[in-house]
Amino acid sequence: MKIHINDYNSLDEAIRSEFGESVTVEGRSYIGGGDINDAACLMLTNGEQVFIKSNKISNKDFFDTEVSGLNAIAGTNTITTPKLICKGTDRERGTSFLMMELIRGGKKIKDYWEVFGRELAAMHLADTDDHVKSGKFGFAENNYIGAGRQINTCKESWVDFFRECRLEPQFKRAERYFDSAFRKNIIILMDNIDKILTEPEKPSLLHGDLWSGNFITGNDGKAWLIDPAVYVGHAEADIAMTELFGGFSGSFYSAYREVNPTEEGYKRRKNIYNLYHMLNHLNLFGSGYLSTVRSMVYNAIR
Ligand code: ADP
Image 1 (cartoon, rainbow, N blue to C red):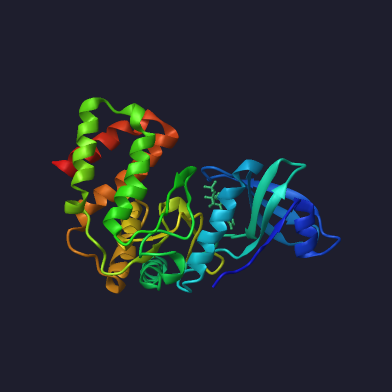
Image 2 (cartoon, helix red, strand yellow):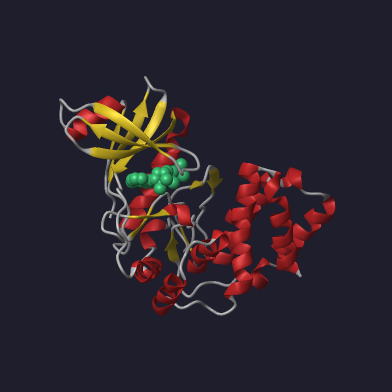
């Protein structure tokens, strides 16, 4: 299911077309907590409030790919994402933007974590054929992991995909941080990755960047997914990321595993999945992440 949203050349035009000819913005309150974009709640003259993310015009692709990702998740009919309104560029303000339903937050439902776990597992069990051009793993287009480019070239094998589309591009980007001894360890790791990773029983649509800042309590009190970096992969890569920075309750994991049990040997593979995110952090935020990357590589080849 692809939900089409309009793409405008100005924010004022977007608001007039979506909400009515006489409607304009009468207030804006900024929302913190994002990594890359400016986020705000827009108060409209018709009394409605909407959420808007904006960035430079040249970063419009962030929003085009975010729309594809949110559409892919919404299409599984398993877990809620905010309703998209429209996107576009605004030459006058020098911005690109994505507008969506405002999440006001609210009281969590009683079994919040269990429902979240079950809904994520259902998403991981959903059909993935629509999202890959060929083969089983990847996505119809490249997208972003934070501000980092994420390559989604489709492959028949998960292990090949993770080696060639996840680790390799990040290692290449980070080359300047590594001395020759460490480069040898990277080669050992890459040559032996098929002894660590395994093919999943079934490919899954992944959120792709599932840390605790990328789910939010929605207007129905349940966890909604935001800001994805979707692709089709091994479900355990999403679960690994939830464990990287924490913030997910134990009942989330037990409910998840009742629906989609963890395959044997996950603990060793988890380190490799999260190495991708730490390499991305190294490339985006600098050498503060180098020692973590080094110890993850050593642990993997030990
Ligand atoms: P970024 O792409 O910059 O990482 P996020 O998508 O994570 O931005 O969102 C930035 C901030 O806005 C976060 O605090 C997030 O919780 C909040 N947020 C995201 N989507 C909505 C929404 N639809 N309604 C209200 N707040 C939102």
